[in-house]
Image (tube, rainbow, N blue to C red; front, top):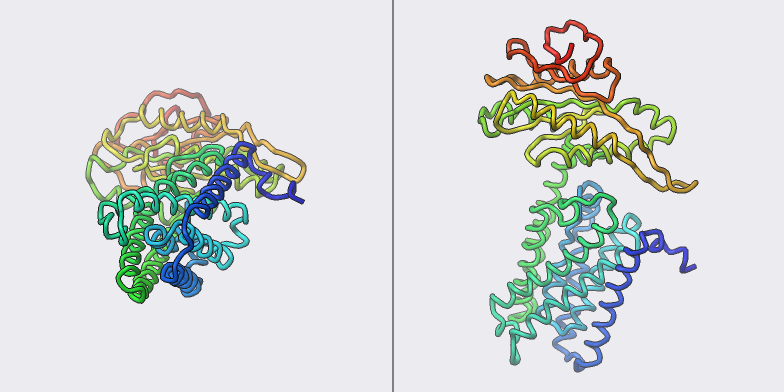
Length: 439
């Protein structure tokens, strides 16, 4: 029975790391139990109050939280750390651990199951327990006397907050890095706004801890702003979901057009367009017909990841639908055709080198031998509207397809100057009025 646990489906080193983290958390809690005195009535009351408020918070925000988990992109920031961090800096370590376990597992039961496997939830609980123990150690070291939180002061609480988020984020990031075949920093460490949301949540937890010391019932005042924060975050997630392609995580066609238009109309040479790339996977239908649409979706996601890796953060990358992608390269040096072609060539080579591995009922499957045709539109120095750049790039893509696929073709808008010399041969493209490299 134990051998059938989903835990063992993970890579061996990751499974061992997960078990080590969980064993460490369990060992430290056992050590704390052995050396700490029995909690007094006030500590037990404070523990029960924080755990009850954590459960009440989850039940009150359950609808919002379920929507967040469905529409979110990237790591999930759990706002229940308000209660776990408050417990970490006020309660004895064992009581803080009990609050963290109760609150976290209740969140999983009500909002995470069955999307989040139990072993992942247990690992997350272990990271939170270790984070609580780290924050408690800071307060214990800096604070003394009957009121350690007051003795530690703002510097101590701030240091405890940083220790808490560093331990929790570091352990989660390590697991993600080992589980992802090609991890990127945004996925491993999360986005800046998600990290800032976690800091804001922990800050609210620090205020809850202070209120708990002054008057336990003042902690109730933390609940309304926390629910408002839930809904504010949900609005942001819904806005992102409306602009993101679900299969690749790239901008969808509507969102890409809207943001690209703003970039083109901005008129700032430092931010304006240098050119547009339109990409089309060659013979992608054969992938779906041979391996199935689920495999095709994973190929699209892998290509999207490779595409993002070859461009900068300020470049706009989107999926136009099907197997077609589009990139608007931003920045100075408009008309730098050689530089745009170099980017397109790097993308073409990366796609050709991709090996997309996926599990199947019949064993591991690897899809390789992918190719992509790319059309490049070079923005002239005097500027060009987005529609014209897209038409030029699309015409260049058509020329790349006719030239045998797995190649790059470059075009410039009419009157923008002579195109650069061709690097690939090919058949002539139809006369559309656009100038295409090598045609």
